[in-house]
Amino acid sequence: MISSAVRLACAPGRVNIIGEHTDYNDLPVLPMAIDRQITFAFRPTGTATVALTNADPAFFSRTFDLAERIPPFVPGDWGNYAKAAAQALWTWTAEHCPARLPLQGMVGEVRGDIPSGAGLSSSSAMVVAISVALVDTNALPISPEELATLLADGEQYVGTRGGGMDQAASLLARAGCALHIDFHPLRPRLVPIAGDAVFIIADSLVKAEKAGAARLAYNTRVAECRLGLALLRHLAGPENQAAAPSLGAFMRAVPDWPAVLVALPAAEVTVAEVARLIGMPEDVLIAEYLLGRDGRPLVPTDGRFAAMRRCRHVLTEAQRVAQAEAALLAGDLVALGRLMDASHASCAEDYAISCPELNHLVTTLRRHGALGARLTGAGFGGCTIALVARDAVDDVLDGVWRDYYQPLDLPQHIRRDSVLFPCVPSAGAHVRHPE
Ligand code: GLA
Image 1 (cartoon, rainbow, N blue to C red):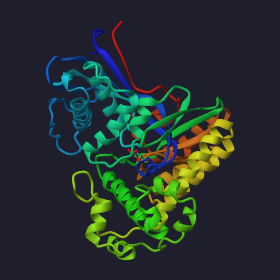
Image 2: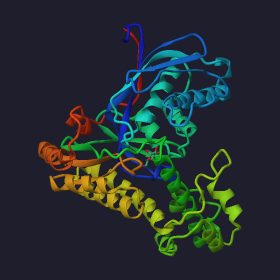
Image 3: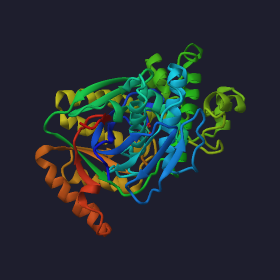
Image 4: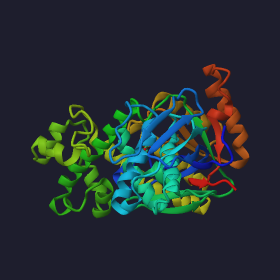
């Protein structure tokens, strides 16, 4: 039970309207915070100890000490998300205000209603909730933008090479708005959502846990983009080599990028073939493009991949983000719906991050009246997001429940509104103190 003397940190999950797998390529995204969140009811301990219980009995209590180096729990342990926040904030404090060290810990209970492994950023919301509680406990002078940037890197503690969308959306969102986010440096821009636009979230029920198998698949896409960039830079000529450290930078530096894109090999290539094509020794290519911060390659480097398709998804998705922001601002829901459909097709065909269940769900949503529908988040399972006109919401919900969920014969305890629900664009993370 939470006593009244306890502070409450709240961090929402997020859903991405459009702009998938663009953030780690230094290209924008268009997410919003949802009305499902992680809450952390806590008290400062006055010592280095962080002691966490979880209202969900599936997750055991976790205790650790704040320190300069915080060793992780075993991979996949939920406590690592709290440690990721703590490690990042310790390192930040040592650099910016060392007089505030050692950091003080907290004792408290975590609870949440964001479905996990569903692409709604339950894990980033957990990192954000713990971090705003630590910032509050230690009165750290860090802005929400700086915290979002810090945590985007900090979450790599759990091994995923994510971009910065999830943490930024959870921290910086505002009620009633989507958030257009540019990266490096982080630049959020609020985009009001017109009153008759409703976004419906539907969970495919295929799990894609960030700390599990989806991590390798995700990191593989990060590596493929880096190799695609190596090829593009080579094809674009020497004057563009230094100027383009990411696909985003390349797109901005080379206005004629569509012509370079179509020159990429259409067939799948290996790392060895990329090295040969650009005339670089393979070990130099790996060192320049594929190493993580720990000095090891992001993924095994013996696979084949479709460089042209991967790059085509990322670069055209960035164009769709700009068009979608304009459509949202103009209240043009038909145009926005078409862009979401095009995004799903690109995610499925070029980026290969969909699955039969997600494709079926998207088709079912459209058949029942959605103006557009797509997978959202990292993919490989998880949720879809659909755009629906307000007066069509009930028809879509009823039809999709009947055609997608009822044939699955779900266990009794799974309620309709835990897997299929309209979402309210919500406010970002905050800490409430007792009255
Ligand atoms: C995950 C990552 C994000 C982003 C999305 C895909 O949610 O954490 O940074 O890359 O996948 O758009």
